[in-house]
Image 1 (cartoon, helix red, strand yellow):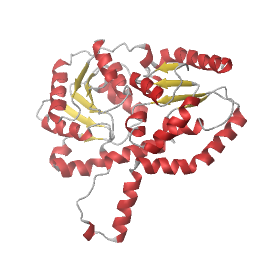
Image 2: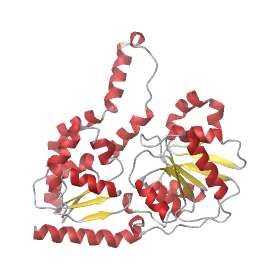
Image 3: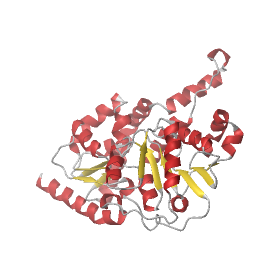
Image 4: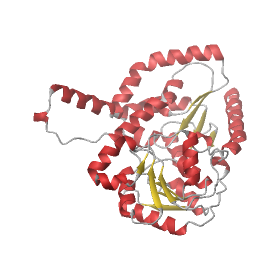
Length: 347
């Protein structure tokens, strides 16, 4: 479900309205445009999942009867979380939220918000990657007494993949976030084009190959041709790219604690990022993060320029706090599950 959900979220950013007038459209074109609109509609996806919820709940109930788990951990609210909380058995349910689960998904969808409010009080534990989400969860009905765990997405950075390597002579600027609605990928492309005169510098946009034609229409084919726009990368490929990066650009409008930012820091890169509360906290701890207005192309370009000027010859790995280190999180998560089980037995 998470994979399908992510495809939906990505589609909202990659589809751009055409300038064709209704009068000039065939019935087939109108039908395709209607399907495209539905694919990008948050409420539509909630309705579809609501219609499928009984079947999904039954599948989960059968799986629980077969496997007899101690805990069910739903890794997103839409829609694993509401499905797991709908199952009536004695198995504790732990719920996770990441980045945009509450804002903007639940906040922009009355149906999903109502669904969450009717279910969230049943959660036996809660894991989150933004302190503001703990407050939001309480507003949606989470019992303040349930065990909670603050940890980064995917439970932190795998330091066996993300570490410092010797940089080459070419300076590398990486945008790692694909064409997602919560990140200003167009602003990155525009900023990179404005900085193309910088010597020995290459700009790489991960996951932007699918919208290259749109970018060429907007910025010109020759300008875009001087950038490297890739498809989606495997974890190994992303790690190799991060280890080569001098600067990583993450111009996010909303998010929790972006895992790509943490991976960049672990790989010794300097980060230019949108002004998020969690990143302000990391910046205050001395981490190499320059926070900018994610909606301002000039600010993105200026941030990249400053970061490149500050890049040292020898990159240094950032020591990440325990909530962002996957190895350290093993014991933290184990302790969290233990607390959930004890709390459930005493309830």
